[in-house]
Amino acid sequence: MGIPVAQIDSIILRHRLSSQIISVFVMAAREVEGREPAPTAVGVDSHSVKTAEAGGPRGFDAGKKIKGRKRHVAVDTLGLPIECQVTAASVQDRDALAPLLSVVHRKSPWVTKSFVDGSYQGDEAQRAAFEASRISITVVKRADKQVSGFIVLPKRWVVERTLGWINRARRLSKNFEATIESSLAWLQLALAFFLMRRLARAKVGSD
Image (cartoon, rainbow, N blue to C red):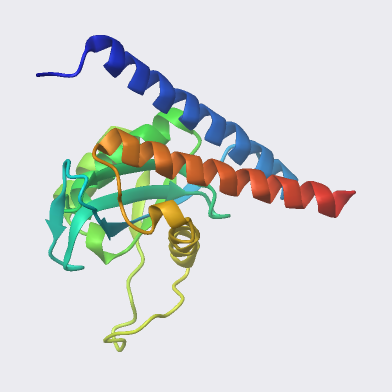
């Protein structure tokens, strides 16, 4: 049995409202930092999380050896969320790039640059992403001599820090939701609270 049309409309409306609220918070936070309200560059990354017994769409991330879902995020140079999406963990990063940047372009048409890691390499995927968004793609690679371990990479550390912030949300430590829509809703809720705390701290500091 399919999902009733009224329920689908309600899900779409809630997602749009949450996305709009986050966009307003981001603009306010950027202005507090002395930046223009609209960003011109984004960092893109993803991370996979295990799912619980609730079931629903899921997949296997062969690179991270995780069965679950994957969160894709695009953030500005301050690490503030511009767009976030959720898919099965089996979705390749490069395949998710075009849909993600396409929405970034619609929401922030002033964005002209994006910085990604090596998992987004591939001429075909990057061409599709550019055609969908008109946003240039720069791959920031690890140093050739680095085999393993963590190293701070220019432009890349910002989005990785944001993923770290997301992991601090207890509800997001594992994907407990039965649907992709619910997973996205909880991710957006966590990001909205993070932005509200950031704005509150800035207000206290200015008083």
